[in-house]
View (tube, rainbow, N blue to C red):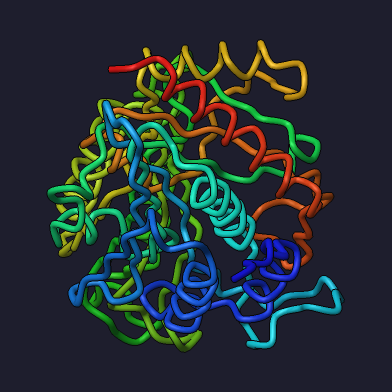
Length: 384
């Protein structure tokens, strides 16, 4: 039986047309399985788990394994209404692959196709992860014990597309690649009343305004400017009528930091300032901060040095050392459990990630596959 090579651009466009949000990636999961089942099966073993039904693991048996190498690709999309005007634009209104996960899946399938046809020396595990954009899919997978027995990697790799690099350029750095993130949800509760009688009420609009300005001092006066940190308050709400004093106010935001120590410092100061504001305004405050699996993506020193050295030494690969990013990625949780490295794949787009007009250059797919395949072959040649 002749097995046709994968049409990777067509597959990527199928993913792009059918985006699905976190934990709802059932059509995506089915397409992944369909493509994987079209490959030679003699080296492959597929694993799914009922606790996380859209997750997928594929093991490629090595010829003389010294280790098991993991490779992760995220599969979920974003609640973005696509405006690219492409022939293969999203068929689901309000949902789009605006973060390149369609590219990530396609690159992973291309790497898997190669090693399904050319047996690797070491065992390989491909993890198609749901719920990266929200719900901490990496944490859910780990807690469901998906990485057990022969499916447990000794080291883990993954890439993320970036429009800031030309198509096919690999970017990486020693240390932290992505920041850790924390969702911040604050609610102030006081006493409402008529606008004409403020002395009989406890105005949460005023308390909210005071709290917002106080929180701006956290990064300005508590964070070492050399280390960096972010506290952004992106959504506020209070009151419904112009002549009624509001009894509740809500603030929503995000914390970003390149180290877990920095994130914990900002979290602590947010808590303290909220409690102080509640005391000052004689009101109640509810503070909810959720980090989940969005830890800083801290690349393993030894493995990252080896990856950078290889990428720089291969004349067919274009490589660039990159600065850390304040965006978040829950691959950081997996790197807290397994040594590994995350790196960038340039996709040369003119719009930013999460943009409604994000349109990656599809030439990056094969260039990414070639670079990762060669790196993995080099890594496996080194023995234990």
